[in-house]
Length: 149
Image (cartoon, rainbow, N blue to C red):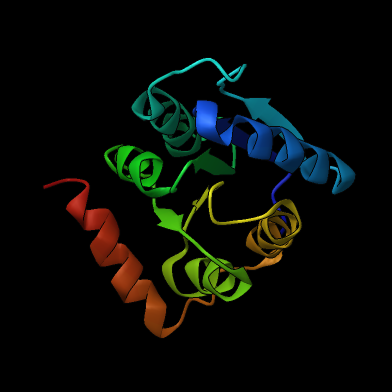
């Protein structure tokens, strides 16, 4: 089931890619909650990674999208929040597998490595792909159990 409400965030390095992703999301009819950054002024990626992950984990939104220069730092920040399963993706296939196999609820990518057209395709795939369940369910349950340890 395609989500209807998502949170999006970035640091300054991902700001322009975030703004382009918002346009793609609007074309898909998805409500977007923008958690910042709001400009190209230098900011700290952990603040925005945590804000989006908290929105997802709390149920405020169904999924999240995060962008920084490499995607690495912001994905680490998001994964510190219990209930977030942030996946750093670098192409369409990893975005699909993140959903199908890992039930990822936050898509992360690096603006330095992913162009706008590829980012739009990844966003679309991430939103339209369902969790496959089956043999993957037990593994995702083990990931969730780690949040409580």
